[in-house]
Length: 323
Image 1 (tube, rainbow, N blue to C red):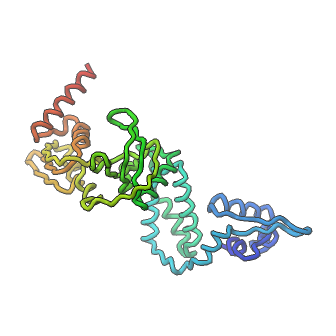
Image 2: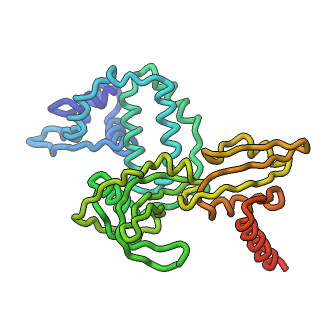
Image 3: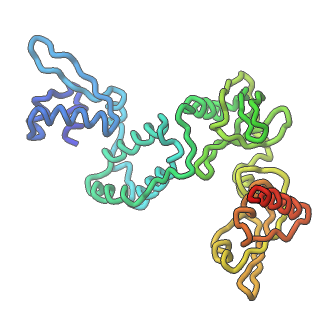
């Protein structure tokens, strides 16, 4: 903090003044300047020495302005609030390797600087509580500009022209969208949009957007669009026609099924042999179907009959692959 104080002065500081104030040698003073820039992502400006004087170092003017406006006491962060912030940070792994991750790290580096001294040691312990796993996380390297443009389009309510690689057709498609909401799901970033051509709400995977162009046309958010309701009603990320399914799970899987809320409208019927029947009123049959199949012979779809037939056909096709 002493180094930051010296650098934030209107006249800045010199290596000599920094080494004297911190009681270190000049080599260590230079190292501190480097660490402040590399570790805390704080830009430091410098003026070349004139008439034999020493080079002076300053905090970046914009950062110094913000620094002067912040009062540590006003943050008044409790330990629980700081833990919550680091929990949220742990879920930002989908941005690993992108400029967005860099910005997140810079924000938390600044938080470290402004945290009251009494919390510094606790903060170091808090960082060890959370493990950020990369498993199943999608790679958004090179997609920063697209994410930024999507953010602008959502805020400005601008219709966009996108070039999108369709998962189902395997082809590149070009169409207009009204971007409504960004959300993350199982390590991926997705976008709720209204497709103007069909006047329907769809979900796009951000990594499949190859190009996006903002138009001058503005749109209004549909009156019946409620992202929270959509996410509650959908089993996965696909929101389509509602479907009611009845699935029987063996006793081995019953505890796992019962400890989670799989959708907003569900009911569990327990049997004496330990098995259960899960009834769900949800949407996104494709996701439901893949989920049922993932349990192998530990789960049986009982209803509806037409979906049960689809499951049978899928199992037959899988069986032929192992002949």
